[in-house]
Length: 180
Image (cartoon, rainbow, N blue to C red; front, side, top):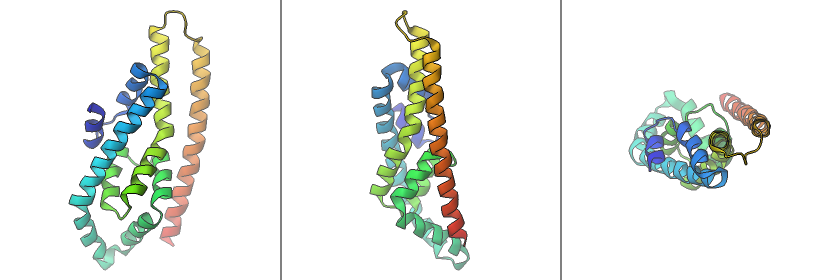
């Protein structure tokens, strides 16, 4: 509940995400965070769709805003793949983008699954970090040596960085295509 409220109110939830790893471990923590984040994102999306969409439609109807109307159409047409890639990149704040996508023409299904799957890699990384903290702080001698966790965290960071860079490049190319 706290996680959902934090996301809906656009309060950074990274400490809560890491706490899930500390309290529940990687698997249960990741499932808990993904469920809470997706529910919160869906609530924000619904607010955007019901309250903000009319304003956006009026704004996009103005001929001076043709560029934004084109972007809105692209979001509607490329819903899932575009949202999935955007969720992999850290270029848009998660909580605020939920309202923006709600106000766009993307379908709820594309939004839901794009959010759930695109948010998963980063969530696993943050939850794992919390689990490592718990292992190192509270372990009674049965934890792995610190360098095992550091190596795994380093490898996870490299993989997440590569995925994020690739997704950022694809999003930038899509924006360049929209500008033409």
